[in-house]
Amino acid sequence: MSRRLLIATHNRGKLREFSRMLTPLGIEPAMPECPGLLESVEENGATFAENALIKARAVFEATGLPAVADDSGICIDPLGGEPGVRSARYLGEDTPYPVKNAAILERLKDVPDERRTARFTCAIALVTARGEHVFEASCEGKIGYEPRGGRGFGYDPIFYVGGKSFSELTDGEKDAVSHRGKALQKLLAEIGSLLPDAAVSFRRAVPGDEGLILSLIRQLAQYEKMADQVVGTEELLHEWLFEKKKAQVLFALKDGREAGMALYFYNFSTFLGRAGLYLEDLFVLPEARGTGCGKGLLRELARIAVREGCGRLDWACLDWNTPSIDFYRALGAEPLEEWTTYRLEGETLRRMAESPL
Image (cartoon, rainbow, N blue to C red; front, side):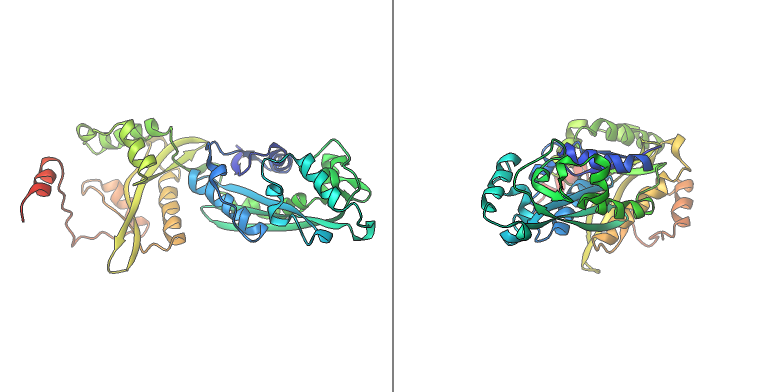
């Protein structure tokens, strides 16, 4: 089964380049289905690597799926390295590339051939629950005197290597020498050990998942003999998860289908002086138990806690739920037997809120 990898771009030319090299490895590149996400990301890094990480982090944090982003650009020596990290925004993001290319050629019209040196640079960032990795490479060339070729995109028609523009190269020729091709080769050499196993993967919940989340909550409540206590609705879940952002949901996918979830939020330890994670619900479908989904969800939450500097991961378990208790103990979790949980809810909570001092 293919492993899914989100490519943080709306540029189909980039997606095709990634697909040519990743698909043979059993990796399925796709664009993120999060309207407005990439448009809201501010690429304010000082380097290509910083910008690539900003985009990859945004997609990973929004989806929970492994994400790759590249930031690349052209650095032209007689222009002092311009456009550089602002290549995509040179003369404005909405300016068509033929206009950008024409402007560059006009600025270089009196520059002799030996001084028209330039390079394409690419940084590819991979962000997964296991960590962050950056792969960088460059391609040296020159700026021609006219755009040539019908392939490629962006600044390809004016960037020449070995007498041909990037737009005149075949896909294979370009992959062998291009900045992105070289950076991708570095990524490919390590990606097998960096991506989660195909059988069990994870993603964050996004708007539209409310029905699935509610279904899993109801199945958990049925297991815990509390089905009559579930009064939440899809509308409430949307409000509190995706509008007010008071909790987050991580799904476990078995063979590409949602098989369990962890719903968690941040709490705070005054003794540690830092935040922690509180796991409110952990549920795995009966047919997926024993496949690594439950342990995987806890592992992913532990990685989030460690990555964000949280002090601990807490959760509660019903005292009769022996299978879960045994599972948690096997993972090294310790019961806090000296603590008793108290709760105010419903009418009691309202009376407390309205009571005089």
